[in-house]
Length: 236
Ligand code: CA
Image 1 (cartoon, protein in one colour):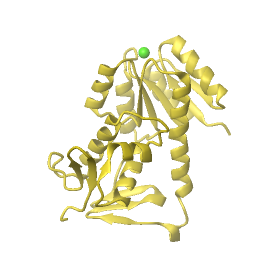
Image 2 (cartoon, rainbow, N blue to C red; image 1 turned 45 degrees about the vertical axis):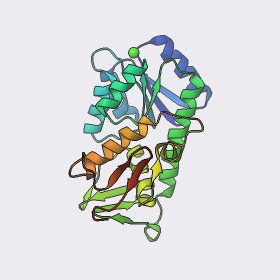
Image 3 (cartoon, protein in one colour; image 1 turned 60 degrees about the horizontal axis):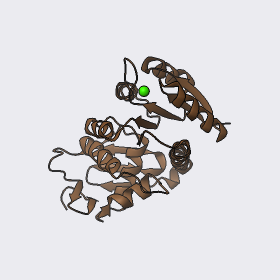
Image 4 (spheres, rainbow, N blue to C red; image 1 turned 90 degrees about the vertical axis):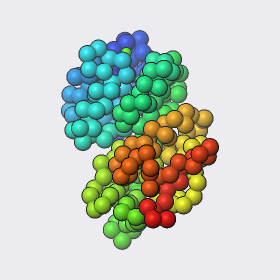
């Protein structure tokens, strides 16, 4: 069965271009032209991945994303932004998209990103194994079960997006080691090309909000100045 992609875009030329290229790549494409229609399609069509334009009439991409997360829908989102300063705005607001692309983009690159996102999701699902295979990684009050796609903090199930989870798994698996942004980008985002490492910073800050008492003085995910990040237990 073909994977379903929801494209949310109010500019018809871009919509047509994306739809054509995604269908050529073998995906089923569903479309929406505004935020309200997008939310309705997300509920009804249950897409595997969403390509979401930031600038939409009335409800913008940001609000769509927030509303989705508040409904506990964690479908991966590839956010489209018009220019670099818009990209900065999105990063500043930390809305929980899994990936970002700045217009103008090549349709081939969009398809490549969608493929990377879906490949990672499939790998994650493939790892959901039998109970005896359940791997548990414990760091401080953090309990991560990579195979079950579950993480607990202080005994409570964490609500994380697929990318946040993958990043968390990578960090706990490499506990105590300094990881560069480039390393994290290549391992977690699976890019075959050089991407924007600010995506890593945004996801780290999302995770910190969920596990740090004081995000300015993080006890788990430490910033190693000039290098990257390191995950440690709170007492170490
Ligand atoms: Ca637009």
